[in-house]
Length: 123
Image 1: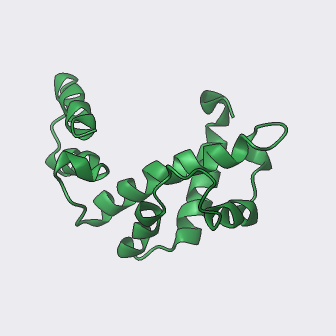
Image 2: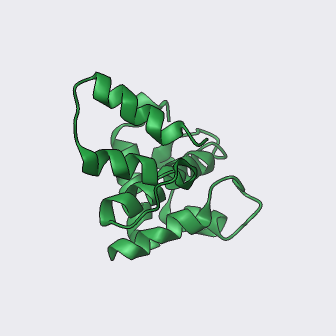
Image 3: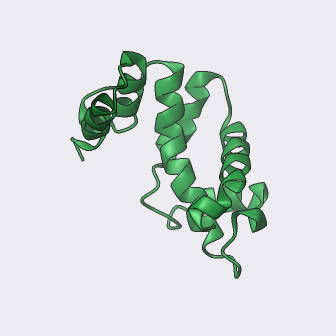
C-alpha cells in the first residue's frame, strides 16, 4: 500500500503531467504513502476514495445492483452499521469536514457523479 499513491504519480509523470499539487493530493489519499492530508484537495480525495467504494458496496446489495437505486438515507443507514463494508474507512470519509463540506455533501456528490458514469462503472 505504501507505493499506491507514488506509483500513480509516476504513471502521470510518464504521461507528461507535472502538477505537484495534484501529486501530493494523490499521495495523501493513502496515508501509508507518507503524505498527510493538509489541504482541501488532499482531504477531498482522501474522503472520496472510500466513499466511492462504500456507495458501490451499497449498490451491490440492491436486486438490480444499480447506483440509480441507491438513496442517500440508505447509505447513511449502512454507514452506521460498522460491520457493513468494514474495509471502507469511515474516519477518512468524515475527514471531508476539514474542507468545510459535510459527510452528507460528500455522499450527495458521490451519488450524483457515480450515477453520471454508472455505465462506465457497470452499476
